[in-house]
Image 1 (cartoon, helix red, strand yellow):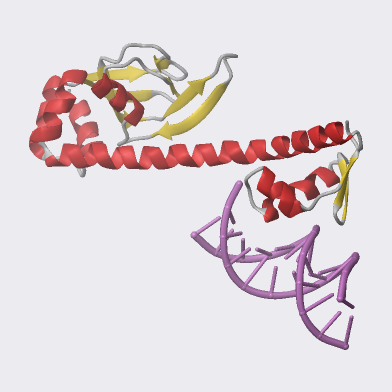
Image 2: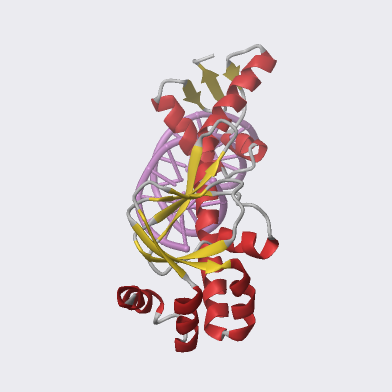
Length: 213
DNA sequence: ACATTAAGTGATT
DNA sequence: AATCACTTAATGT
């Protein structure tokens, strides 16, 4: 168990106070997980919260089709904030956690979490800090998704417009489109340029010709 | 010729 | 993706 101690200290020693570390050693369950294992799956009941000692875990969302989307990665010294919210809210897991590498972690029983929140300052700030960074990563992911979908939205918008008009030429400005799609003119200009390079449309002033209908 | 508006670009957050 | 700053091109008066 001294190996476990060393890793716990080196991963969380600078974050958590000594007394808390002792409690973690007492109550936490040390686990080793091999690569590509599902640690937590969608709809799993959450009974413990993982603290990562070594390795990396990816947190995924899954849609109806089983398509996966990586939300973010957890590394040494991290914990899963979504799991945290599940622990506190007593709901089932809304995400899937898969080990990206071989992973060593400590499972903290769900019940201890709330206790420590009031008992240890360092625990409280660790949780808040971790929540904060996870939310940021999540927002970043959302931005990326939105970015990837904007070109599709734009093309659909153009096709719809051509359909309604019964004309493959659309008479409008980039600014107008940007307002319709609730984005900025610059973004539209760039995406249109991209579509033109892909040969899907032909651009000219105040008009766009849709080639791929 | 000058002003206005549309569109393109690079850099930054 | 959004915003800024700036350039270039097209049009109107």
